[in-house]
Amino acid sequence: MKKKLIAGNWKMNGSSAVNEVLLKAVIAGMTGNDCLVAVCVPAPYLAQAQALTASSGIDVGSQDVSQHESGAYTGEVSAAMLKDFGVRYVIVGHSERRQYHAESDALVALKAQRALASGITPIVCVGETLAEREAGQTEEVVKRQLAAVIHANGHCISEIVVAYEPVWAIGTGKTATPEQAQQVHAVLRAQLKAATPHADRVHILYGGSMNAANAAHLLGQLDIDGGLVGGASLKAPDFLSIIAAAR
Ligand code: 13P
Image (cartoon, rainbow, N blue to C red; front, top):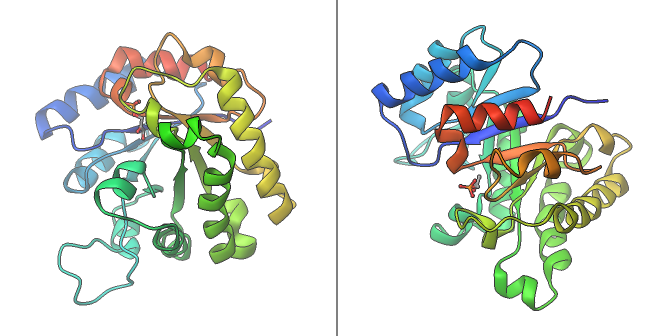
């Protein structure tokens, strides 16, 4: 059975001083037989996170990547640059980027493609809004979002990580019930199975108010292979409890 993956998404939080305290505490609290662990940090802290986590078993991730390879794209960071910093994962299509930066399914698919071409694993986020859930459109929405990435990436699709993050559960303290999450994860797994014989290798993470109290139950579901953790990844004891629940 594959190891679970717990990835922290720090979002736009942290400072050199705060990051150092946090990462040292997480590393000190890990037991050596943990699940796969990653922290997705703001771009200016990639080098710091890389240095602090060296040989700790924690991988470093970024929170976004440019769809362009290189050139006159002021402010953008390319996949090759991230690779240069030892980045292992990159989050693409987070709902906050879809919402505040108008990222389309096609753009997210292209970003995933750029990451894969540079040997970085994209963590592809999908998820419905509350209005979409209430309108009974959850499956349709997540399948549309994942289909774009499958279409653009062909046989490489078994190399991605998928994160199901219901938008209504992000930062709200409202979590999908384990059964609600499992239902969507099963839909995503079936979609991956139709695209690759290696769908069982793909980690499908749950994200949205995952915390020390609810992690074990969520992670106990058949198709929940880990978590993409926001707020709780900023507190070492909480993040460590989630890691322990995923062992
Ligand atoms: P919270 O865990 O803070 O709800 O955030 C989830 C998330 O968006 C992770 O990418």
